[in-house]
Image 1 (tube, rainbow, N blue to C red):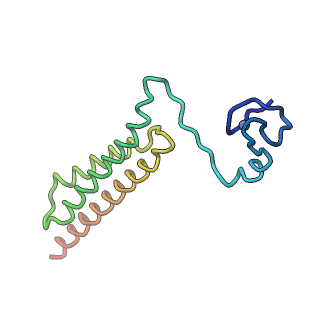
Image 2: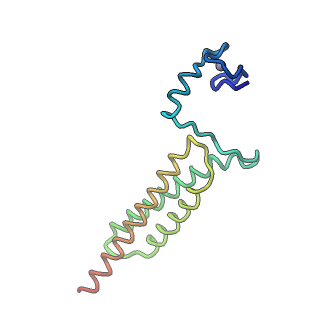
Length: 137
Ligand SMILES: [Zn+2]
């Protein structure tokens, strides 16, 4: 016996087409490699909400570090509080980007992480640029 992928009913192993929902097993086997089916991570009941919170927090912290990077970049001088903010919020974004999340919300984690990556690299770029310029002067 095997389980029908679409309707979940148990059907004999040699079934080609599901009797109750007409799911085509042959077709599925043929094209299975084309789509990756990922499932949400399994966590205890009391941690279910963290699967939603983790990617959203990662996304929010990524945005905050990105905004602080913009403030840092366009300010004519080096403002330490903005720089620190970039690193702190980027770090928080990284922390939440490696935690478990619902499959549908993983894009939020990816975007949050990349916003943090860009924020950190641009900030370091300005810092190095500023240092070199002050040495040359
Ligand atoms: Zn079925």
